[in-house]
Length: 375
Ligand SMILES: *[C@@H]1O[C@H](CO)[C@@H](O)[C@H](O)[C@H]1NC(C)=O
Ligand SMILES: [Zn+2]
Image (spheres, rainbow, N blue to C red):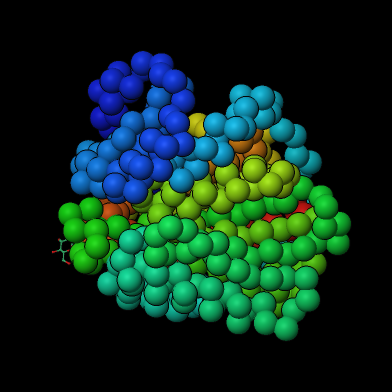
């Protein structure tokens, strides 16, 4: 995610209303390898080649790649789904949450992140990106092995790297689902397919926070009253591809979602800056953020603060926000004190400013979010 700037020029160019794109045009352009991008809210999507898309990414422009979700999105009246600020009760599961967060292990997270960052890259269109997805599925399958009421599966895409989904059925299987997400892919912006992109912080940290949260919940024998899911998304760096596909699929299937929280970069704060949990300020639900502020205060050692707005299509929470679902994203630092080495070969575990003690606080938030909202 991130690296914002620019965008405004593109926005100005895209403000002309047009008729919906016909299925024949959609399919023939996609078959030619063109990609359909949403560059701004309420603007018409534009067709770009993969090279043009990469140029936008290098310029720091954020977008949704809606090539594969356009038809579903046309059928769903998004504005009608946009809910007012949701309300969530104050944290009340201190006994359970405190017991489980005491078992979170930074050594486990370090071991997982070492494996993930050792893939040459986790680009969603590279073979090592697909290998990373396979490793995540294998890892979560082994965590939930032999447990009833928990399942793991891949959510396949038209590109090589699948998203991975773990589901706790919950005692009331028909209740709305609580979802925690992170993105598994990484990118070297100068050479995506073959360049080195350890993606340790972006978003190896969020990825391993959720793996460790899952492990701790399962080890504690936690059985949620309502459904709980963990999502590891493919292709966030390519225009929120994985989360956009999963959110469209859930909307299309009428899956009700109670709340969504994204963890995208949790392991860095600028050396010398004040260590905080920064809540993203746009494409989020203020009610869910109010709940998260209490979670951070109750369960972590860090102060909570608001970040500056991150902008359109900034990370996977935006894919769910489109459908009126309450979303939040606790971020490693306020913008400016966040990681400057993402999307490069320097985003490693050993970089200056990387901190497991910091990232651990976000795993605590994930445990609390899961337990408080599904108990
Ligand atoms: C991309 O990877 C190559 C080598 O694999 C490296 O030389 C280059 O610096 C990387 N680009 C970035 C932006 O880190
Ligand atoms: Zn990211």
